[in-house]
Length: 77
Image 1 (cartoon, helix red, strand yellow):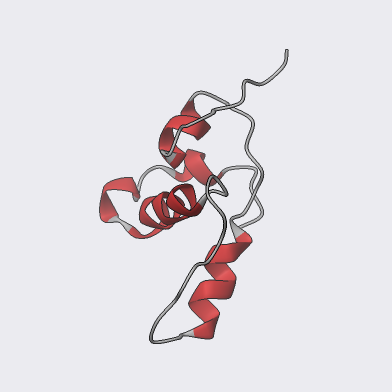
Image 2 (cartoon, helix red, strand yellow):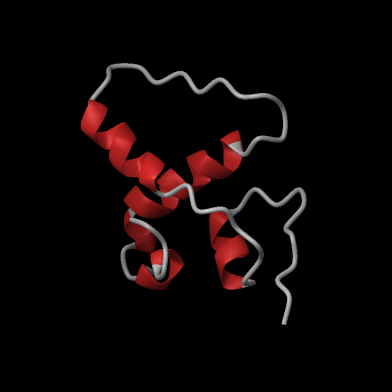
């Protein structure tokens, strides 16, 4: 079965729950965390997943997702 493309979806949780096509960018979390910069500036063109990446960070670090290991199952991180 083909995966759907979550056009316009900005919720990492929704994309993972609905098994939408997702390009794994979870290694961004490790790289970002290890740099330990004071400020992070994410510059990308429109529609390049900036909001989705921030939502992915929220899902990874917020306590309300602590029991949701399934969101990151099968991903690089």
